[in-house]
Image (cartoon, rainbow, N blue to C red; front, side, top):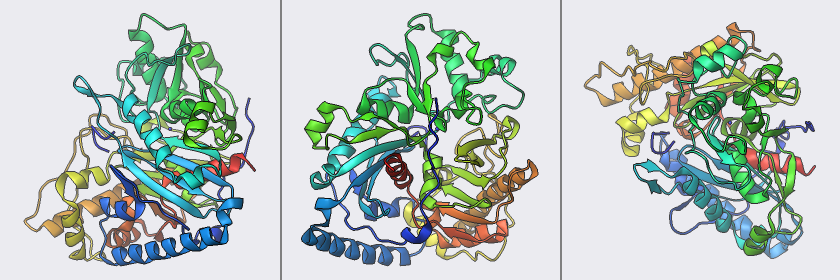
Length: 500
């Protein structure tokens, strides 16, 4: 994460609303104290594009402030019901508050505070602090109107807790951490090429803890990052969703853990699974009373950050795909066919009666951050001709190891030779990342997924127009920025779905 850079069933519909709502503007945006960053300011953090985005951002902020005043004057807020989504990513948390039409009423973010426990980051304290800071950052006049809450988190970020006390029995294992010691054991019990047959899978993390721990086994319970954050709000320990549980071995098609997993001595540690966006319980009374949420405010199961980003983009038809260009590169393709193949880091998440097929590469914005400042990225991008192919062939990784489309924990970064011209160097890196993206989509097709027809882009990299044009040329497909790009918005859509 931030320190190392930068997942019985009641089936509910997860497909987003029709795109007619997606062009509506936010009707209010709050600016906050301390290290809270309003979205209008945070746009520049990963912005690689040109100055036109800045003027557009200022224009939109003017509309938002104007519409906010009109809304309050007309008393619209008094009758509204609002829905809260929160995204806990690799470097910080965000929230989005929407109404039933999908209009954003407020959104903001916070970076994770770096609390230390010896030489390591105390992620439990960091995430908890961020959660309650964001809740307090929501304008108090809106809190009383929020009727449902959902949270997304990073896939395969794993916590082992004492089910009786809620105390962590070990430090959290982050999404990109690998447990090679457990991989042979997992491969011996799971079907060949199963999603869990990867050192970074949740199941490998559970097995690694189980084989090295000699206490508290009987009362232990596994929870993913978003499960744990939601538990802090509703108080029912051991509840997860089938998107997060995919990498621990849950089968969303059968709606159960498979027999080979249920027969293991640690099966009692596995959480109870519900569909994403299912009501778990009401918000805890002490939180509700302190912060001013209504008595009937409910807390719902969440999802992974990449699934939430896909929901936010509202790509509703098979063949539509979303590439998330943040610290890493993640692709998701809506397919009628389920594809799972651990050899290539490919797995499928259930989305109603369809499948989100894809994978996540370690390439992405984190590499760019290591090499260029924000100002350099913006200035150098202007000098790039996106219609001209770069002759440079790199495999940009922030550290050793790749997950998709090549699953190789020892794969080294390839970022040389470096030309004298910095713009040419950036061009080569951007194009090389685009080639990795293209290889990913080609692999999904070869494995039997629905052919990709159009790519929506989420994440900070979506703001770089030159990179978008490079990707269009390399992919040979139409590429456009999703109208909603934040995973917090997708989580808010889940919160809304839960109450329908």
